[in-house]
Image (cartoon, rainbow, N blue to C red; front, side, top):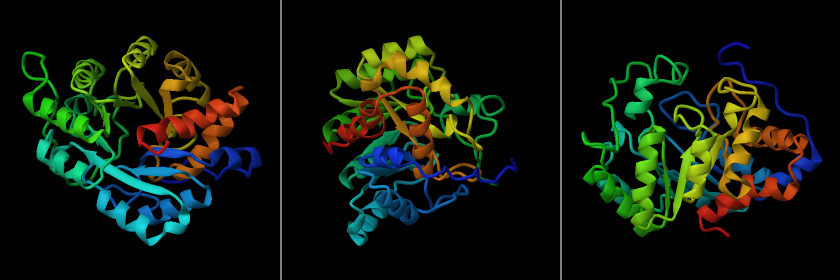
Length: 305
């Protein structure tokens, strides 16, 4: 497959289409964006509406997308889709910046992602695990960010951010922080009243194994598996069946799937849901458990259930 050649669209499957209804995508990379994207927010909203999704959360590594989401939902109420966004605490947002987080919460942001492209953990893996990660040509070199100080304790700025997230009752996502940082952060977040915690793609960049996943799930942290990692396309890292032991480690109640799609050379986000649902049906998962992992677990995190 050429670098930016999209995989073929999945065949129609009536059972899968029915299971798509009520789905929630917490990790959608529609555009506009500095990185090349295969669809924009409007297209994603319309496609999600056609599939009768309950909600979509768009994610950009550089900007808070909540204004776009508010206007699009207002302009196209017939879709029936709740359309949200959040903020990633990269260099473009001022890093681990309580001012940016406060603004995001006040504007209706649903997720605060800790640093992704600017995370020291991500930067340290640019030549290995993150080698194929999309980049913005000509952008300044990132300033490495971590939630820990020189003594391995959470920074004051991070604690302030956690307090704002707790007060807003929104989702704290680990972004691309390493697993050791995330354990420390989530322990403190829980103590400070954060109720909704999420690990993004635990086995890609983060460094989680099945033991870590079980431990984090035991702390009340939800595992979000990126569909793009497990289906054909530019983002694939593993065969679809590789996700099964990860689901079993956390349990269905502590597992959600987000598309993490929108990049060129990969499936469209809604098609990613179709492909992954079909794979899990073939693997023997019940329709009730599929609805939990692709819909109701995430809907609860967004206060939609």
